Image (cartoon, rainbow, N blue to C red):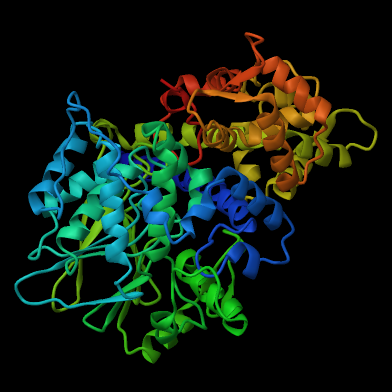
Length: 617
């Protein structure tokens, strides 16, 4: 008996240590993810009604320069406002070659077309750009007549299925369809936003969902998420994905999607009792107001502008908190945190019983809060790393009681022990954190030097932890992480210059004397590649020195970073390896590839992914 008790005590301690490591790992991933979103929303990521960049965050100086950058990138955006825009997006002049072996679509699209599309994407086939543009055009025409808030009903013969964030994880969507069945009049679905970004198959997910929406407009419902936004897509991967898959017509596809995103409904109400929306609510949420606005317009009357944009931002970006009240969401940088008192009031005011939202990754795929009046559903499994979380979806019948189905889309996770799963996720989180540290190297060195007035190169571990939080503002337990980030010390003092050299990160290969420019490029290398793809108007993989210079001037203005013309010219010359007077995008990205990218890049939203995707074939 004594031996059994000792084993039991040891095992409990073992599991407790693993749980502490798991929670710490989760905090790292989530803090880095939210810090990235905070940076993004500061430059105004939602440009639907009205421009949140220009109207809501008018006090944030980077907005104008970033809008100029985006305007420069999407040079033909004026066509989108032209009455002849449909002629610009016309698919009829695009020929489908006889050698094309992918799926063929007929219009009006049928359920068999939609099912064939699912099967084709499952087998890694690509839909021809003619069909893509035609499908998107039909989707846009349908979305224009849909209300801001969809009203749907259950009945005894069928349940409604509700899915959360998918984020480009096609394998999760396919698994949901395998377990639950394809959408149909007998199998209605609500997809609660964030279909795109992060994962590698965002466009395929959109095309599948749009095809079923066209076949079953009364039974398939799509709510807009905060990632259904072209400026957010520029940073988080969807823009790069489309341009990589459709080099010739990618920009037209992106512009058409920009219009489609602005027309997506904002919420769904089930049986007048259950509200489904992407982010959340606030103490000012008014569904009656939301149901009446023109969601696609870029401007409204001045008195309505600020109120409306705040409500929309709250719907797409907010998170619940355990305390009563409603406060700005400083962690994400947009939306709000709302408490159980706000939930009770908003539900009471609209005669609702439950709020279903998404927007936050949950380890089990779902989570209740606010006395089970708020339910978070997240459908992208392995979101941060393989084994990091389960995905889930909801089935709901006439009793409006949610039933959960959980899953792991990656088979490899089933073979991992708990220790292996935690260890793998922990290594990935620490790698992401090291990347973040290198991206803020100059700021961290400056902060360390404030604690080192005699310039000895040494600081205490307590001062190291304070400086880390002061610069990165991630809210992480730095003293707990010290053992994993800091090696040997000298009598409790850290040599911070040596520490940076020992972070196991290989700096970019490009030999530049301008350290500020080098660090800036490192921080924004993913965005730069996407921008260069867009500037490369003839899809040659080359951009001129002048285009390179103009882009950098716009980018430096947005980043409020002083970069001289001489530094930009030196950079251009150093990248022009074959000295032909133009810049090869492949060689540019190769010059800024890093040692950790030799490992499996996975689908993590906060890790380097410039491997196979960045190469232009």
